[in-house]
Image (cartoon, rainbow, N blue to C red):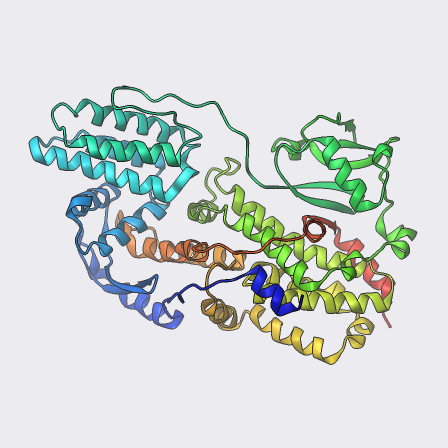
Length: 553
């Protein structure tokens, strides 16, 4: 069908437009809010500055406050409205959302669990004690809904949930009205933590753990096919050696039976993997890199700068429709992006608990963004024919434009940056042969990568897009890092909640972007073209290839 037919088939979105704070207005509000008189020294809360916050096209009056971590929690619990007391509680919900999204900036999860346990067993009696327990349950339920399965790895949280459940269960005789809240809490745990918690009954006084389920994460496995290039394979963690060899054989036009997979240590020692060995492992990287070898343990390709095979290498991308390639890139990026929890951005910014899986999905998407940029460079520089290279430039420019049209600015950015790298941009003969309309289109696309005025062009373009949409993640992380490093977390031992609100507001961008689902399916062949990328990861090789294609005059 035509491009317009494919567009309507791939993405049929109809979502209300989202309103953001204008950048300039936000900066003015921040400056106005940074005044000394907004806290007092007793550690209690005081309001100082009303800042208007836009969320899902609704505006609330948000009051910036300050206090010690425990005072903040106390304030949240005292102001928290129970479900049967609901009124106009948007401001309280926003405050609670800000706190739960950003508490890691000023306290650990263990500290939060301990503080909530203490408040569940407070000194109040009678009705006050009932309300306190119900509010703790409600706050924890909101926390659990917000974090989804993100907390299931936290031993502190598992222990706290059990303790909270038992604590409330023991109070059922004195407070029968807790039964409704406890049942809701049970439902939430079963729904959100089904990998961790087994069925619970009000008659049971403990929680049992389920057996672990299949790992459903998405990972990128890198297998080297020459000394200076690797095949990036988007896959699942349980991928076995024989499955990976089949992919390498398909992508590299090699006979599967002539190859083996080996782990090469830093000392050069090679250990051959058995067909049933799992090839993806967090512990593999320290041991060495994964390599596809001939049976005599030599690489299946010589270094690319010495390879005569490049002249015979088919340029498969030229035979695939550009809209379909963009759709496949967007489909893959979306599968990674939708797996990201808002909290990963906070963990990533704080660099807390590296290697614990708290930033796993975000790290994979960032790796993917880098690899798309490298793939664009590699494809162009491995193309020996000038005419085919010109065709590739045109292809990538159109793919970038289609990615932007499909609201995938992560891949659009990566492609544009790949074409703008020195090794590709210096190919004057190639660019001169590129038709004027493609150069004009590329110049227009380059505008969204223009960093001037704090990436104003990108921000305005992205603001106009409806969800679902995929932001350029490195810039979003840069924004959060700028807020975190440019503002103190504490003022006179009181938490600077204005800073936390700014971080939370930026992090909520993820929620907004994920607020709808894309439609459409990709053909297997097109998907394979972007799931398995041949990438040159050696800068020297890239420049040598560039100068071989077009020697310096």
